[in-house]
Image (tube, rainbow, N blue to C red; front, side, top):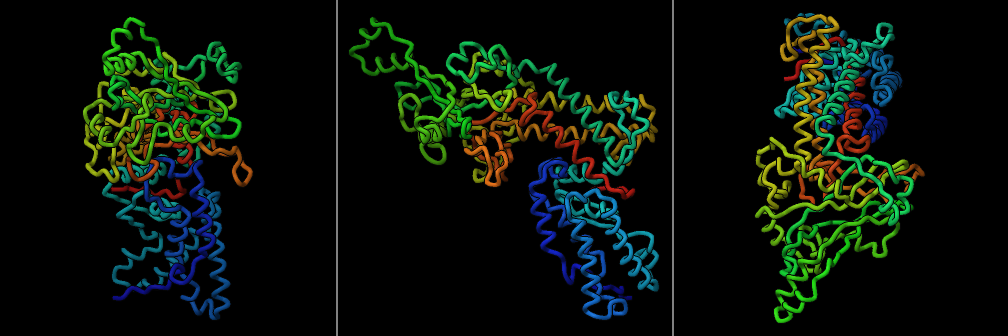
Length: 587
């Protein structure tokens, strides 16, 4: 028997301008957007997903000539439906129950019409139950925009994907929040508040509160264990004598935001063969007007005894090597406009790719030489500058002995040994001796990320204990078996905390670089321009080689710090729990 169908709104027309505007605006929204939970490349705009699903489910007025006999009547009804979509796609209405319910009511109206028209279908009871909307299936869910919005509109959504990261993202966005919706937090800090009993915990607010609390516990516990690897930088009177801008900070210990490193190789010039020269793509730290800062390398001659010079008079090579052994360089940081802006901008780089010059002699360093040195295990790194938190912005400092020695104390007891793909077009680090994913991290980064990973498991156990302590119902089932009680609650918190570690890894590898920001402190629209920051590992869909890199301080309150990253996890949870009571089970 043929199923009776009506023409749907999406087959006739859509308010494309409103959908496009809302989708474009969504790209600039970070606060609370589900995309901030975890990186996924091919995310679809939530606004477009919501509009498309609505238009697929709702009948077009032209399908009912008895109700809308004229084209004018049809256009009027279509305009009413467009009005619903135009409100539905706005970001601020993402959790607006009044707007969402209007859309759900239209979907139910169209569905019950379809059920009535197919009442004589032999499988009507199974396929056309007027009390149950059809389920939504997305076999290639990816970032989960479609199943999330289907669920938000009242449909029972099923999602799957071959990529386990996509599956976890879908679980975190679609399955977990509704399962624990409306439940209060279990953490002792919130439980100790007198207002807890009077407060109404909507959606996933309780879960978000627990993610914040246990994420902060991880940060504090990690600082106790490895905080010595991340020392603050002391501003001394000697530093202020060379840099008057540092006088307000004398005697203070500033929190480091990032350490800026340059990779090094031995100089190809025989006279300086014992010197590890920097491969710096730029010495620029900040071009912002009034806040210019840059690195200036200083070559020093520590002196050669006259008798040694006299003894080497007949040996030019030996004399050059003797002099080279007494010449060294250091990095200092200058503020203000540089005399040679182009030289500062270029660092020691001569051209695109692995083309540099020797800082000591100016000798070109060819790509083949760098390949050979790197694959022989002779590529190192040298600290160029320290970026600290000042009272009114970034403070750029020259390396100190304490800041150079602190990372040497890091002794990782584990390192990822999975080989990187042999695809230099998208993965170039293996060309330079960085063969495994573990090679993309400094020892300090490895110790920190391993510590955070261990703390996720510890936090999970802590959540389970706190859940039992407050006497929440316990069905004895873990999350993977559909549990919603005390036995399961530690798992969802651990899922979001594992996302936290993943995001820290994205901000904490040697493929992260320093983004100096714009030269103007105002945008074209007159707003304050963004400040200098750290580019993350996955700035694009590839892992290119970096020559100078920024190592963030996970314990700062600025870019890359755990506190900052944690906020991008907990806030979106309040946007993820729809009013639908149905549960999703992604594959």
